[in-house]
Length: 397
Image (cartoon, rainbow, N blue to C red):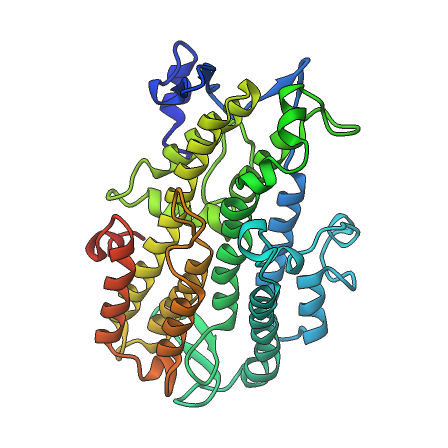
């Protein structure tokens, strides 16, 4: 696991600020980001994102359990909703947090659209149920066209698929990246509807902290967005590839030379935006939120294309490997509906567009029937919405 590329900037900042971290904004309030994501009030940290760390930890155990064929649907549902004491620690079981309630639950996209939010939650419920009723009973059966079971990759790993070649565990894992992490970061905690809710701006201006806390509500909301990306590590020197969700795939994209620097861009925007809140410069805050929206959305687009192209390479020769890649691609495509175009209230792809892609991939016998032409067409259409090419996305790892 590698340190963020921004570490050089951090070291340099011990002597001078990185120039990209400084911004005045039109209102004249000087904003200077610290070298790391460190913010204090009267000598005590104001950074707190423990709820996000908890949900990431729950997510890790949940997606692991999806490959334990001794689990019942009640147990898996219980991990998704945190009911029934199915986690490995008392802290998780006794937590008031859960995964399902924050899935497709952002202020901007779903507070006034509960019908769609419930449809998305129902997708996850259905995938969980189908893993138990369709895949688990066929755990030792060789999958064939139209029949669930397992397939072995050329390297020896077994993949457990439904009748159409889809790994439900991968669909759930990668779709949660969008429905939980991306949606909460881009469309909830970085939203002005959340940051400026109620008296938040006046309270932040007056440095009125939340009851019993050392942070203002606005500071905390920004930190909660930060936590969904970096919540399993130290904010002062966060590592990548530390969880199975957005943090992992930022690492994958950062390691592609076509996109090197994206990790530093995102971390710097989080730092500067948080510093802007301390400086009460909301123009700079919102500018950084838009940078994060663009870059995080790009991760989802890049990985969608990457997995479609990776799956194409072994389609027809190593079905287990191809179906594994395409299942990951399925999840990232599902996550496209939670992205956010900077400066707008709209995703890069609508739910209707995502649903159409999913239907196209699952048509007939699903991955058993899908063609390279279909995978290329979808890849081209996704890349065209972003600032990268199919060739660039296909070379990440």
